[in-house]
Image (cartoon, rainbow, N blue to C red; front, side, top):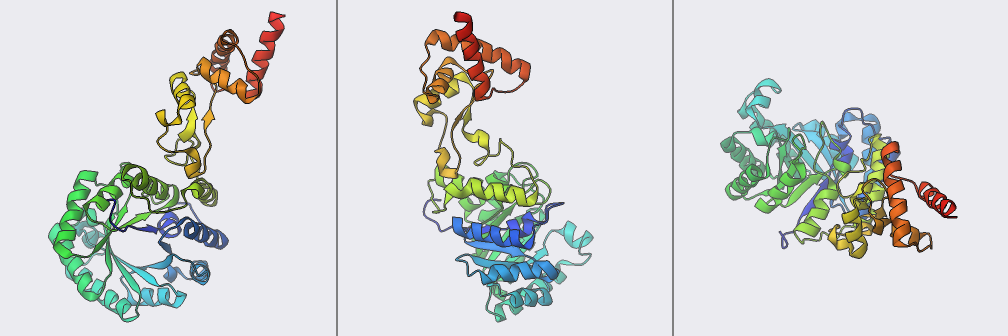
Length: 377
């Protein structure tokens, strides 16, 4: 995991925008592309050119930015789709077609032979145009293994640079992901991109398992935005690689919170306080034992620094607080209180927190202390 080159493919502007009810304005798509490029994303799947209209114009604008990141257009396995992408100026194309029998029979209403024929025809055309090619095996996780290997070998022979392994409905677990990707890598010898969905809450774990098995590319979206339960989250994958696997991809992770906030705003989707990596509760401590530990040494309850992802540490005063947090809070105000005063304030804080069903604001804590001073005379 620490030695291999990993390519991060962000599809916020394509799969992320396919979230039911989400629409990015053109200027938002352009700004998100700039932000993705700035933090270090290697490839940006900018949209679906064949949609035409605003979609096509936004993709053209992104291409004109001259980003360091490669810009990719998404296509069906149709030559005219690919030509529309090329007309937009993209340097990479994704050619997507279903490989599972349930999709072939019920969605495409055709045969495996038809799938292979159309994929090869589209891939050969893209190759003749000199663009980078990702052949996407939609619903790969429910595809027959032997047919998927045949599909991947045909794509490679036609000129594909990689296969996108799509866990389209998020049914994999990390163990089956590892075995599936290892089998495909060994049988075909082509670069694999993991594209995982979060229907069972395992998108990030499956993406990492795929990398461990030999995949060299991973598809992500900001905040895990995407159809149904979403995709593997960019910020989760990058930080897991950096902290858990000691593989720093040299992203500007300190800009993660800013990026997440903007995408949340543009997509009109809440950024939950409990969101992994970028949620405000990541570095908020209320429990007395936790807050005391974090105050003594942040590493006791924080695996990386809040500023690493653009956040700040918070010691929250509420029902579960302890005296150490109370004393620390008053020291922030430039006021040293005694242990006796802290115990009194803590008792009142806990009572108020239960009545209000929330933690307390700084002003409310100060009022409790002022009441205490007044009663003491």
